Length: 343
Image (cartoon, rainbow, N blue to C red; front, side, top):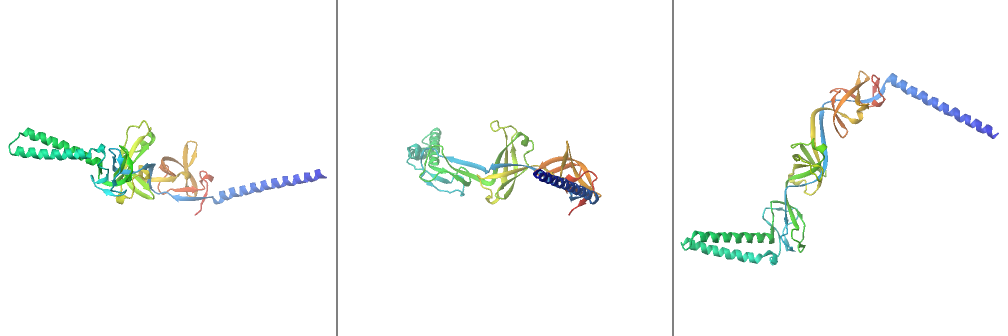
């Protein structure tokens, strides 16, 4: 009895399986018949000439077009800082001071030597004007005075640290009362009306980069136009790459020194190109092709591709302005197939 029940159950499953397969086969045939009679549903777009540009993208840290830092000349405690980050300073203005009583500075010795030399020079000068001494003696006194003056000025610059260039204070590395060591970096001054970015590129990329090409710096949604100003022709052996330098105008100090920005270099522009999305291009062996709409049918067109930028492909041959490109449904097509345009 049990064997009979199992037999009947298996027979029912077999009937249901073959019935389901026959139904699917019938539906498939119906869809194929619909495509044949009404056309394969597709979407299309009309091609027109447009600009095509290819870019190389990098990341770089911005710096001022000109930067200069000041360093401690001796070990001591910072007495006073006269500026803050963001301040604009003129060349030779005093930014930081150290105590004058540090023996390493020879501050008072240099001051006394300068004052004595100046007094002696004035005395010799008066004697020379009165005809009391020779020209050689005057020249010797003048030379001594100039040496003492230069020494005094140098000592003052070590105690009163001055701006090496005019620009904005972009970095202050110490605070008042900090103890610094000789050659410690104290601050950095940058000219930021223009900004500079350096990137390292591979030997494949450098062949596409030329001096004068347009570049863009992108930071927090702001895009600033610039120019490629230097392309090295020798590879850096340590980095195994080529250095490329770009400069960007920086009105109102939009870009900030020390920030990391995305840099894009436009390496190629075709102002009148046929451009197709990569997803609309099909491949068969070593040939590439697309389908265009011609008198209600799909026409297969072999194409020659140029450069590619992300998903856009420049078409060099095989398509013309005004051609109606099939952009959806092309995987169901063959040459000469009837199509139905879906809007």
